[in-house]
Amino acid sequence: MTRVDAYPNPRARRTIAPEIAAYIRDKLGSTVVYGAKEIVDLGDAVVGGERVAGFMETSDLREWYFPLSARRAFSWKTAPVPANAADRVSFLMPIGFGNGSPLPQPSGNWDLYCNDRFAVSIRVVKHAQLWRGVETSFAFSAHRIESAPPGGSLCLSSVLINESFAAFGPALLTVPSSWIVPGSQAVLRLEARADAPSTRWFQLAAAPGILEHSDVYRAVDVASGARPKVGEYFVFFGDIHTHSGQQGDASENKGCGWGSREDNYRYARGPGALDFYALTEHECQIEKNKVGEYLALADAHDEPGRFACMPAFEFTSLLYGHRNIYFRETGGTVVNSARDWGFPNKEPEKAVHPDELWAALERTNVPFFSVPHHSSSASHPFHWDFCHAKHDRLVETYSSWGSSEYYGDFPRGISDRYRTLTVRDALNLGNRLGLIASSDGHDGHPGDAQSPYVKHHHIFHHLGSGRAVVLARELTRQAVWDALHARRCYATTGAPITLSFTLEGAIMGTEIPALPSGRPVLQVACAGSNGLDHVRIIKNGKVVHTSFCHGEWDWQLHYEDYRYSPREPAYYYVRVVQVDGESAWSSPIWVG
Image 1 (cartoon, rainbow, N blue to C red):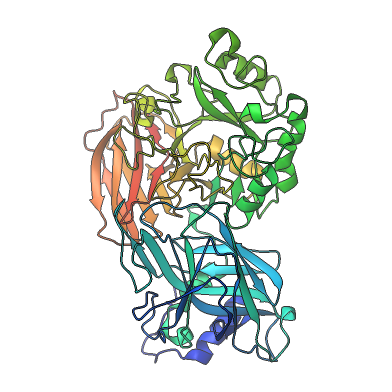
Image 2: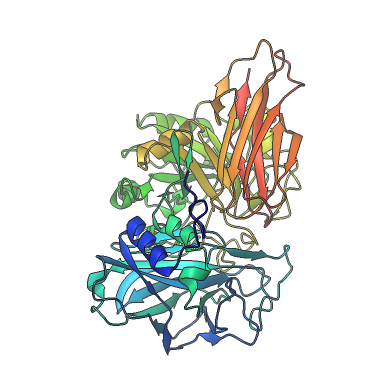
């Protein structure tokens, strides 16, 4: 593959600005313009100090921080757009995102405007990310990522003195040329949107030489929308466990979450930047006579190839455990865990038994599967004796509640957990469950649930809130559902880690017969959103191999199980941990 960097060809001189601009035009079909020429209105932005953060040696020491809690907008001018610009213009600028505190902070977003036209909504990330608008996009390439230990803080500049994490790098805002008068400057404006006070921030820096003095090629890769692949499959990221604040038709946060159902769908598609999504309201939040209207929301927001949505709900049994139900098509139903269609209860005679749940769902003739979650939570434990071999296809290994993989795993999220109801316990009992993650968000921010200002104040912490990842050939509801049902999926804490795991050529989630002779050969390949710390292989609930990655961003592992016996069934899965603690878990592969 041709190398693209400062010296793209052997024995060639360094590329210069006009050549880099030509490369961007060739790859993105846009004219690149410097995007941070002069400030128009500081609004509530804070001016940087004598020591700056950022990521570029050639910065002219000017930087501005715009907090998520700002009330007044922050605006600035770009360099003039050439009169002969292409059909689209990409404004290149150095930016950053951060938390502003050693404590986790509520989520939100910033709306970015170009010449008073809404372009795109963005949020705090500590990894590369692409946000898409209707005719626009905003691509961020994280080149410098800083993370403190849990509860610790970093001093990064004269202004950033108490940070838990921050990320800096080049960004490309791409808009139609018709939005700009030829030969003139554009005015970019940022407006903050937050439901609760938050110290999170957006940074804009001044670096006129960014085109030549930064690795903008990586930002171009992000802006191109290139999708990672694992074998023959594309990799898609989603959040399929969230709750709104809507109770019936009332959208003024009377439910257990925040925001209306429409708000949650909009955030998931916009600043959440999810490929696929499911709203999983508690049954008690859904009016019995409006189940069809509730499930039809997924149809209304489903956009094949852009944003896949599955109809879903949560069966919130306080006696047998919580599980989410996901339908492949329209026409499903909602089953309340209370016989009187009320709030969940712990009275056996008034609670719906899991067998009744299965029967009601099967009568719809609509394909479905279910996912137990926060299984070891002392407040809402899951009863593994009622794990359905056919319908319980997956388990939510990680969410805003923390990790349920094994007792003592990080981050706890909540400290009061049962020690024998973990994901590893479920697998050791013989349940063949794929592993996914999702947020169980209650704060109206799917894909980035971090607010303590909702019912469950404990479900926020220093890592991401969890995402499910599927390996599918296309981004449609059916393809996503099929991948999840096939357990061709994995979990991450929220970071877009790419993970491939095969055993004797079989992909994650597969069941294969016992091997009569020889040793199982496991192949692992992963690409992190930050440096990788280690990769572990777990067999039958025990760590059998650890490979240390020493901060490398890409890693491959070949492992042979010398202790394999064809007389004993075995399952294997992989766990990846980055230097910042963000992690991924593959679905298992079963042998025998």
